[in-house]
Length: 283
Image 1 (cartoon, helix red, strand yellow):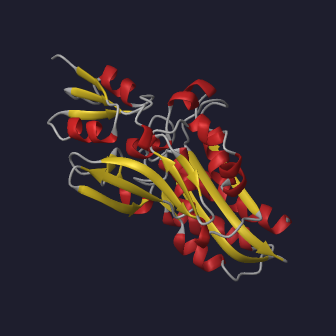
Image 2 (tube, one colour):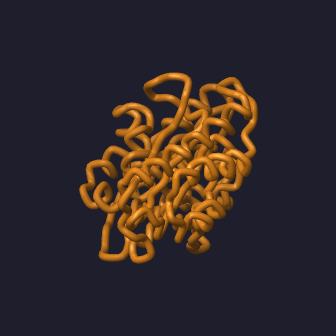
Image 3 (tube, helix red, strand yellow):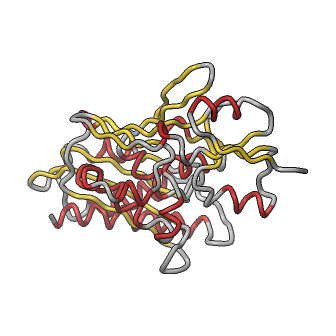
């Protein structure tokens, strides 16, 4: 089968090409090209959006950060505004692959790939980010939490693409603590066996606000909303980390695979949660 390649110059051209049968979006390609070579994915037409100006914008206003779906991760990391206001996203992206991969890979692609181990998704979930989706029929917005539906599965409709990722700064307090850690089978460029990202506002050992998400322990990266609700207003004590460890381990549903057993993942993510809470208590 012949694979057609189209480099879109405008968003309209990309959407027009995407509306046909068998089309797939190519942005950074760090995941898609591997899948095409191995047969894990198939398509008749590749629509390259890497130079579409509307998808390459990174804008910050007083109350909102908008990151175009085709902005390379290295460009996001080069933004002082993003790193200052969204330090959890910075930490997550710096852990993602190598510098060469970050020069090609995009945050939009990281989401659309919909891996349960996606590093960028943890920060976006913890920050209540949303995705703007666009097609020839119009546009809509979805929370990242609703956009990710399962391993390799998203809420994207036929003919639709992610235009941008948006974070409402007006609803996001400035964190006093940030935590990101993943455990894998090697020290560099690892795919997480389990991971946890979080931010918190702590005043005199009392949690005023918190956001937490975990990866590789459920069909999608998972926001720990029930844990957050228990912690807000809570005074951090010597036993708090143990309670959170048990609760987080008990609420996830990891699987066995070549990188680790479900039980190991459950224990690891509980330990990561306890480590985060311990750091909050230590100031």
